[in-house]
Length: 435
Image 1 (cartoon, rainbow, N blue to C red):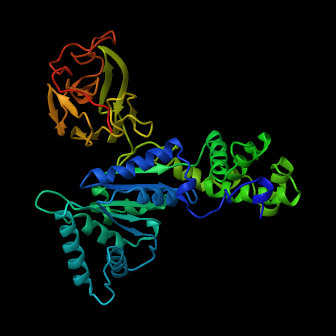
Image 2 (cartoon, rainbow, N blue to C red):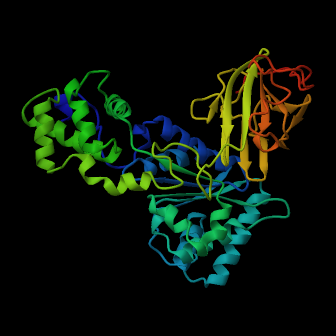
Image 3 (cartoon, one colour):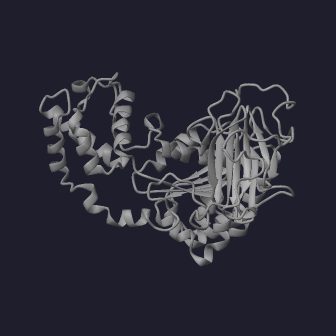
């Protein structure tokens, strides 16, 4: 191959999903954070969609590899199966040999195993890739599995990943009960032009380029034009271009090498073959930019509430709350990032429905407080101030305010400091940097 020519120690653009090569764009990082959220919640049920080759499988492989030892996971990749075959596959992943069991025995064995593991304080997870191929009967079995519970909580966390048509299948009238159990959906978009360039350099660095510019600067725009930022297509084109360059004894991929690869692949420009994809991304319920949290059962719709972030008596930013989930934490993978050493990586979440908003601690180091009392879960009321580390969150319920009547009484109308509400962060105990 071309490893010696480019002084690399492994092939940088293989099509196999290798977590070592995972490039976390902002959207990929957020999708991974949402997948991780299923571990925190007993009723975690997340659907991740994306076009063919956008990196869903690599993301799943990385997520599964990083799971802690107390998480028991069944990972299903073969999805063109009957309901009985699916149940058998899940049990095989959990260590059983269920091939002679009838359906009733399969369900009983699976239910007993899930409850037993839960009683041992294990967290049990089902991860299904290529879920768009699941039949309605299999999806109904998943709904039934998602309902297995103890006296206090559900026992199975679920991630379904697939192509955009998975959403169409889940939105079918006969699967409404399943759709209602999904906590969030996330569409994983293709890479932007800048991200595609960073993706190429990242994979080359992992393969041993040591910062050397192996692709000439004028090749990146052409690569994006013919791949649309789809990682799998980028891999195919870059691999072919590097082979073409090595055949010409070039130690750098020039524009002529790239054009030779495009000719060999017989590819048209990406925009000319993506009208269906563009229509999908502009369909109701999907942000055309991708990467935005969408509600489980409808488009985001109008703002139902707001939160104002403050620190040191000054309002720093304002954020609208739509139906769905907003995760707050220290890293950029969160919906709302608070860059503070007293904020955990994923600190808390706000879930918004038509009935109202709730805030929930995500096992953070320093917790969240209302009226100096540490809380785990709280239904937010208009004017609530939540202390989070050295910051405060003011909750404003739009449904309790008529338009044009001004802000909540807790907010200075000039946009300045929050008024005293009795929710001071003092008296909450000593803050510690998260581990």
